[in-house]
Image 1 (cartoon, rainbow, N blue to C red):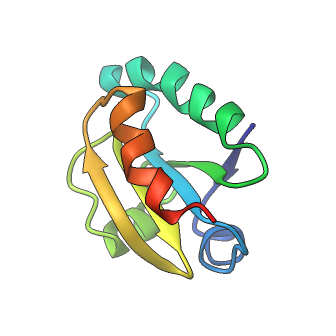
Image 2: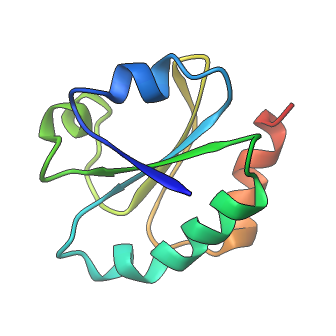
Length: 106
């Protein structure tokens, strides 16, 4: 299951997480974001308990999006120990996301 994060809970939910976190930087008006949404849900189910999956609307949390240099959406970023360890922009297939995530899963 995906969790919504914003400027108020990003630090607690993402940066201080005990497990790696996949953050989907998206916007409601973004068509590629809608295309990648089912892939994100698949990933959330497959890695349940090993990976936290969060969605951050760049419209609702512009501060966090700016802080991480999000220039295009969707941008998918893997955070581990409070740092971005992988990042990809665009609607990518599940296999690409899995190859980003797998090296960081214990």
